[in-house]
Image 1 (cartoon, rainbow, N blue to C red):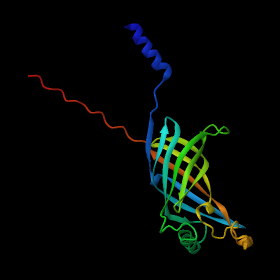
Image 2: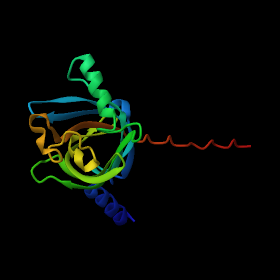
Image 3: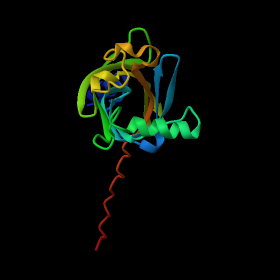
Length: 210
């Protein structure tokens, strides 16, 4: 019996604790998303808001997840207030994201691979849906443990023409010259997902002895 107990203790010591796969809920208020687009001779930038989502973590490794972005929240912030309001309205219109018909954008992770050039960065591939059109995207992302759960941060570069956003695209309107807007725009994100809290252990009441 002593030998059997020793074997069990030795195995537990060398294998260590088993880290379970968990699904954490994204906290929109604690997440941050910004966008940046460029044109010939300049560009614009602003904010977006996360709406909902989940993050799947296996121990200390990101393995999956889904993020819903509230496209009605898109705003320009780099210019004067009047200019920002004008650009924000245009971004919400059908020339760009058509938020009345398509209020949400979604990215669903399909694979995560370690980045051989970095110790803590992953190469994430997912299905990105904008204006009802879904295309694959690949981007670098880093998972960081926080006191409240996990944070995933990175930058996604998106070719807007893949999502039927052709306004002033040099690819479709070659005569625009210096009035063209670059096809690629970037979304920088730092998304926080709170780990599920453990349920409190139930205690049984002792029966009174008669």
